[in-house]
Image (tube, rainbow, N blue to C red; front, side, top):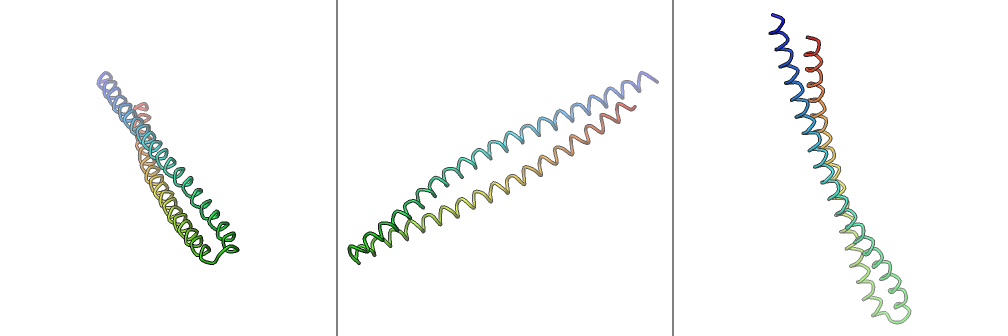
Length: 136
């Protein structure tokens, strides 16, 4: 009967709307989580960059000090060279850490993009189901 078909249509439309709402909520939650993760990663990257700048400045300073002390005495040169090497090693270590954070961030972004793509697919299906229900 016409009423039964109308009822079926209303139920299908309601299901499609609920599915779309669920997918939308999931997409929003995912976007918020991604935003939080990115903020955290950016914070870590900024802190590492600041430490790297300090370490590089310390290495440069130690190199200058090394030149000055070279004129003064050979034993002082050895001490300054050791300091420069230490600062340089730390800068290298910090650079590796920064690269690791960048790699992690890229990996998380790729994963989040994949998850967003899945949610978009679900939204597409829900929209198609709604359109199909509308045609009936």
